[in-house]
Image (cartoon, rainbow, N blue to C red; front, side, top):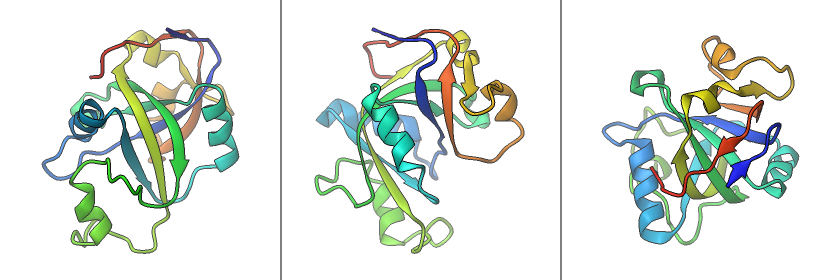
Length: 167
């Protein structure tokens, strides 16, 4: 499968949590259950834009921390919500975050946005380099060095291949 050029996507810069690898933990749940719920804490992203992205295939770019190589991964999401998923198909370390046992990380007033991910696969460096900020057309690789923003609306200037294997 190929994601066409100029497809709107959400870019999410993730962080590892303590000794847990964000990527490994989320992929492990997908392999066991077929999906995983990913939690985004903080200001909610524009719901209308997210609905439009979901209606266009539901593609998201996950960007690793620079310390872990700064690699990009493609994720497919099918649902978004603001309540803790009843099926609890999320990484076990989320319990520390949700229960407030980690005082450095937990903010009781933080908005929550949950994304149901069905796939996480790698993309090539060339595909990652084709990503631009939707509003400005600036290259993501240039902008990401100068901002702490965790979520951006992006599009691709070249097609992106969807690999069949989760990371």
